[in-house]
Image (cartoon, rainbow, N blue to C red; front, side, top):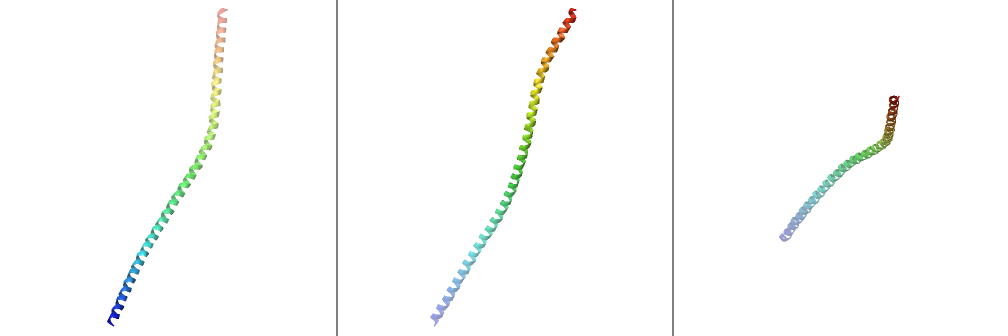
Amino acid sequence: MDAGKDEEVEKDELAESLNDIFTNVSTMVKAELEGTNHQMELLEKMNQRVAEEYKVFGDVASGLRIFVEYLKSKSGNFDEYVQQIDAIERQVTEFEAVISVLDKYVSLLEFKVQSVYLHE
């Protein structure tokens, strides 16, 4: 019966060793899964943070677009004033030409009047 007892002891030791291996492998797999889970949670938080940043950038870009549209509308108003200023400048140039002709004509008349007084 000693042989049967030895066999039983060996089976118990084998069962214990297998149980320890199974427990250790389970612990290792559980630790790996927990590590992966923590990495996934970290990645999710990072993605949320990046999404918040991009939302802020989107808001800034939207604000800039509205500001550019506002500047374009103001620029359109300035174009109207620039056209008016150009028209006034052309009129002033024409007016200066007319004044120059009149000035020459008045000078000629003055010369004629002086010559008539001098000949009398």
